[in-house]
Length: 175
Image 1 (cartoon, rainbow, N blue to C red):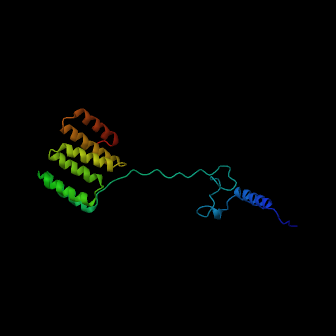
Image 2: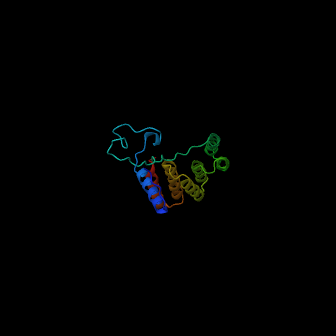
């Protein structure tokens, strides 16, 4: 015994009733992500009184910067040059590495150390702050940048500010 629906209002009511009845229907295991139902006793299992918990993304791991092979070789060369007192050549070598990896904060810290060695504390401070901006999220890099800032401030006789910078560095990672 079927009746024909002759009015648009009747058709609309029928569509709404069907939609409402499907909305609360339980999902079959095949329609779940992954294609299987969770084991009994866990959230969302059939017959379970515990509702499914919303999925939260895992916490992001802290960033860790490293040097690539070419930059590592250039930094090793720069260390030899600055160890021999040739700060100008050491700076040029680190700058070559920066052309390879311009956004690597570790290289900016290296350049700052070279600048500090050539008694250019203001330039060392500027490169340390550049490293700090690039190294956000890596506590080891941030601490190294703050140590360099503290050293550059101390070299310019700004000891109270250097103490504050050193405190910030130690708060991130002890030496």
